[in-house]
Image (tube, rainbow, N blue to C red; front, side, top):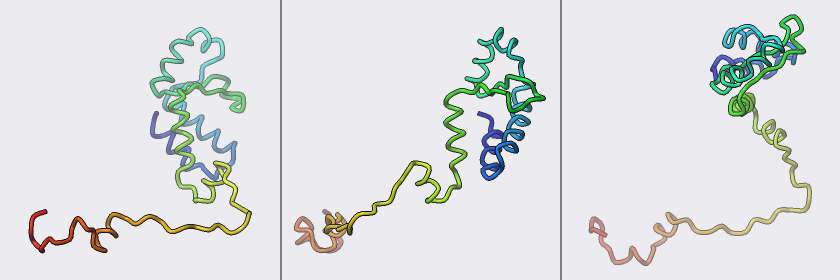
Length: 137
């Protein structure tokens, strides 16, 4: 995946849908070349898929009607887009994105935790008793 596309996604988090689409079209054209017609993409489907799998997204459709364009990308690149879009979110935004719902019931009672290994050493672990300072274990 070309870093320019990921940067565009990260920088355009708060942009309108149309502005983001226009920026992405421009960036993808810089990387992958001019958009293909549907007929040409169909005739050269193997080449289109090969380029997409190698990280070069392919635009299909008329550049004059950008809302009708389609993009062919590899699934791994789509995952990178999602991760890039989420970076920089606040904790609340990230929780909202995964559908987190806060607990609205009674009090939550938390029991005493387990003693840490360090705490046991400090309090006098029986295995460490009887040793003098500076002596080998």
